[in-house]
Image (tube, rainbow, N blue to C red; front, side, top):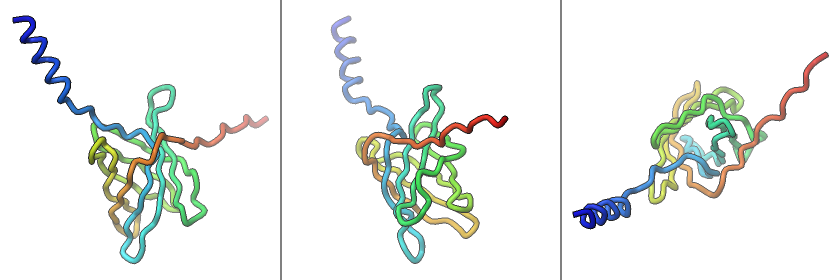
Length: 134
């Protein structure tokens, strides 16, 4: 009986799919009506376990921008960034091995879909700490 139960548990574990993680370096495009905007996003947890991130718009001066309001739950991910106005991104992790991140980007001018693919480990750029003023 114990052997049968152990075998059943081992089979169940072998077929269990791990929950995809948002942590990583993501590359892709926001699909605007008249063009595609190439972006890269880095998401990770800081030493305190809080989600942080940075973002670059490849064809602009918006580079290594800190992400705001980063939220990750199950496969859902959302964050905001100033590009130069505030833009929000909401999507989900999917695909084989959790290597696709798709959703919708929005700002005051409307919404557009985005598609990102995991391209490696996260390299979040955090702003340097401010020096105290005297």
